[in-house]
Image 1 (tube, rainbow, N blue to C red):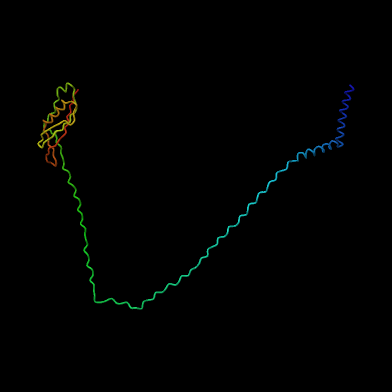
Image 2 (image 1 turned 45 degrees about the vertical axis):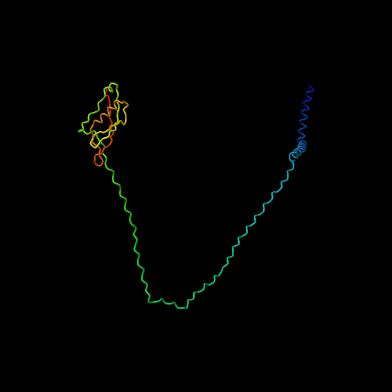
Length: 217
């Protein structure tokens, strides 16, 4: 118990002593002694490197002023004056009269005659077998061709004389069946025709005649 009281008394004594020292200024001196050392340690810095000063640029020199060329004035020499010739001009001889030249006759070039247009070709009329007065019968249909169901178109080239008579005939395009082709040739050889004409004059001509063979269903 006595020890505890001693410790409490010692603590209280230290506090009282601290307050007294603070009032007496001892603690302020201790702070002043410590602070300058710290500040000096913070302010000391390494030396900065020396920087060479930049060279000053040279001043631009003014451009030389152009010198105007000196124009030289050349005086022209005076032109010489014409002096009239004192010698008199000889007069033209008299008594000789020259005749004026005769006019030359104008030469005219011959005018080329315009080319004569060729005459128009004469009108051509082909033979015909369609006239009603000719009474041409239709071609007969072969019985064997009917049984075999043969049919088609035959184109016959026939030569017509000036009298309208077929002198010869030949197959120009076949129907594909010889029996029908032969019947068509024999038919056109028996027909009568209107002869062809050239410029209104009858003329022997060849003529194409189509003949159809068709079976009715």
